[in-house]
Length: 265
Image 1 (cartoon, helix red, strand yellow):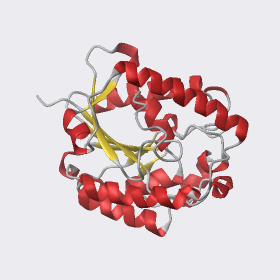
Image 2 (cartoon, one colour):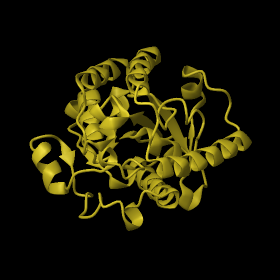
Image 3 (tube, rainbow, N blue to C red):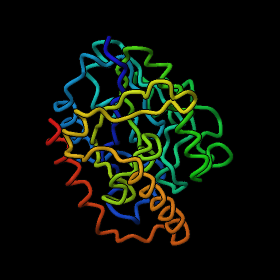
C-alpha cells in the first residue's frame, strides 16, 4: 500500500512580487507571468492522474494558481479546490491579507472552489489568525492534522500556499533566505509523506525523490533548528524595520521561479 502524499506548491507570481512597494496592494492578482508559470507547472507536474484533493489558501493568488495549474485533475475528477484559512500567508501586510468571503464568492463565482471553511474574521490577523510565530505555528499544525485526515491512507493531496508559510508548515527551514522571505520559488512543488505516530503534530517529511530532484542535501535536525532560530530573528527584524529589503530583488525572484518549475519537469 502506497503512503499518502502531500504535494506542496508555492503560488505563482503575483503583483506584490514585483517590488517591495507592491506589498501595500490588497490581495493582489496573478501577473501575466504568473499565469504562464501556472501553465508551465501544469505541463511539468507528473502526478495529475493521482490527485485526490486540491487544497489552497483562500488568498486569490493561491486559489487561481490551484485552479489553473491543476485544471486537468479538477476537471477529470470533478474536484473542488478546498479553501483552507489555516494556510494563509504569515504576515499582516496588505498583500498577505485575504479578502472577505463575500468578495471571494464574487471573484470565484462559477469556479470549482469550496469556501465553506472560510469564516468571518479569517483575514483579521488577530487572535488565532495573528501574524505571530506562535499563531502561525499552531495554524500550520491544525492544517497538517486536517490534511492527514483528508488524505487518509493513500490520498494524493495538492496544497497550494505561500513561501513564508511553507517553512512553518513543513518544519523545514533550509534556504529560507534564498528569495524574499522564503526558500521556495514561485510554483515550485515538493512532495511529502506523513511521519507515522506523530500524533497531534502530524509531522511531514519530504520524500527522498523530491529532495534529490531539487538537489537538496540530506535533512539535518540540528541544522534545521539553527535555521529556524535565524528565521525567527529575521521575522522580528523585518517587523521592526517594516520590510525594508531592496525592491530590485523582486523581479529576479520570479525569473528563478520559472526556471525552477522547468527544471522539475
